[in-house]
Length: 163
Length: 146
Image (cartoon, rainbow over the protein chains, first blue to last red):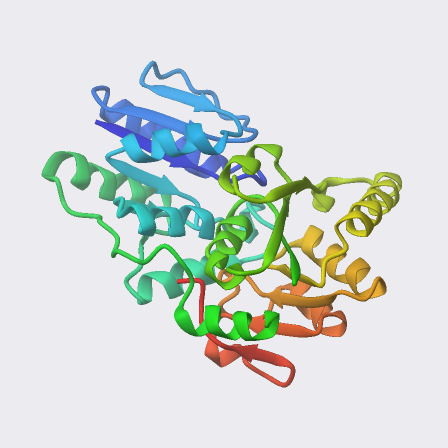
């Protein structure tokens, strides 16, 4: 089993990486690939591979081959998982902990999970418990399928502006 | 019509690409903050723009001049962006050179318009939110990237 963790192109997200270290300790048979721009977390685990910024091709490769995606609550991660119908868990960055400039990821996570687009958790503990369930009991974390493009209403509106 | 579609790396760029069908029948060029993204728009010209979030003041001025020159070269009739700072700068410079400009606020902004969106409201010809309850005045809701 392989789990792909994506933290976006902005600031570090050490709370998530620490949680991944905890999860990786509990599940040595699972491989974890983590896309991360900068971090101060020590990662001693042989089953965790850290990657910097990934080209679109490499990013797609890991995304497609992963059994599960764990991400920050960035729309890039969420939309990509929805299009590819990949199981996804998001944990929003918390501005109080210095993980982002503002709390829009909290709001995004709440709204997108209320609309059943994603499964969101808000603490490292909740994430660890959920991933345990996923690995041990094979619970479904599959997101719903969306189409490849924006809504027809939005496309129509823009087309009209361009005509 | 010649359209410049511009967005920063990450969710902004992913959302911009979902607008592709709206560009059908027009000439479209893309612009983003990572050169590798060229491979995601193989049928269009691609331009690089610095990520203004992370630059010091001198570099911002230098980069602004670079973007101005690039926009002069592209001469777009329309500039459309899903954010963030680089898109806002294109809207500002685009207005100065007479392009029509469109700001589509990221779907990530579910509770209020982004800071860049609020500034875009003062400059862009058209401003859209992706959440109906944020529609107000000039800011219109006409659907989502989902």
